[in-house]
Figure (cartoon, rainbow, N blue to C red):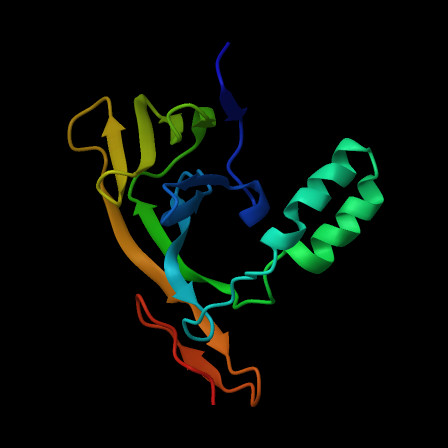
Length: 191
């Protein structure tokens, strides 16, 4: 049995895009033919500032929560977990931005497919334009902490593209709603 998700059309919006990641770097690829969009995340981009928000008292309630589940008292266990085991309200994870790949080839598309291999965590887009078969493979290496995109065409010099970043992540101060600008690896403090 193959552990793959298959689609015959590109993603229209973020909820239809397919996820890639290594636990630190993440991306959602849309599989668009003319202008691919990859929405990027990186785990150091958070609103606010670093601080310890661990719930150190949670361990005191863990055994009791397990006991309630074993006794099939799910509603009571749920309430206990919500009140005593979860961490405190924390900062929000922020997106890094989008990466766009704009392809030079024009024309109608046939034989389109988009997939995510759940075992290798690699995404793939394939299609034919005219008499040329194109494919893109995307994965994020856990070892090297990089996103890898491999573009191929079955004819030489036919994978011409332009790569550009989308708008950087934006956030707003929760007190005065002033727009804050993000730089990679840090989020500014609010006022």
